[in-house]
Amino acid sequence: MLLRLKNYSGLNHVFVLLVLLLSASGLAVYWFVFGRDPQMVTLWDVDAPAENTALLVFLPGIYDTAETVREEGIFRLARQAGLRADMVAVGTQLGYLFNHTLLQHLQEDVIRPARRRGYTGLWLVGFSLGGFSSLRYFRQAPGDVCGVIVIAPYLGRENLINSIEQAGGPLLWQPRDQQAVSDEEAVWLWLKHRYRKPLLQRLFLAYGEADDFARAHVMLGRLLPPANVISSPGDHSWNTWRRLWKTLLAKEGIWKGPGRCNALR
Image (cartoon, rainbow, N blue to C red; front, side, top):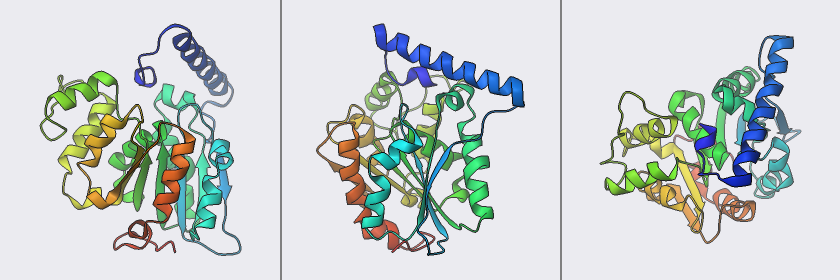
């Protein structure tokens, strides 16, 4: 799945392959020694001394880490906005993607332990590829989370987005091979079959209008309630994502609306 993110060429392609090989070899060594993947890295920001039952779980993009989320000011902006929730950023390392174990680790290393610790209102907030992983998790286990916020999510290769556009949009589109549906196609099928259903009221989208993935974002936005979609000038970068996050934090309908589990203000 990972190598389908873009049509990499030249040095970029070599770099991605090298990173994949190093990541996979690292996991292989860990597997040889311990017989399993390493536990998912987490970076917490706890709203002490408050005892919150709400938790925001942040999934960064392909080349970012849990530390990136903090360094880019995402935690700080949430605190400045008065959000009453604990927060945790997770390390979605390439090896998990390569081994197709990311969702398993997210559930076993983060979601289930959080529930055992007393968190009842869990939200996923995903950036770029982390947004795609958030959608996949929401598709797999919608009862685990109150809602999902995807910021500039990766939604598939260019040829897939072209085929959806050429079909007239997600509602008219069908995958070419029904017997071999990719992860990206599975997410689009899931979204189209839940159009105008209550589940998608718990999904929020934000993106920059000059983002490389904006064509896909526009199509996703048409499947969601209009109030759940935010766009602004900007590209596929943390500068844009910070502005979008600030706008989302100021949007009362997300944090106080009915059926949103815990009120976070």
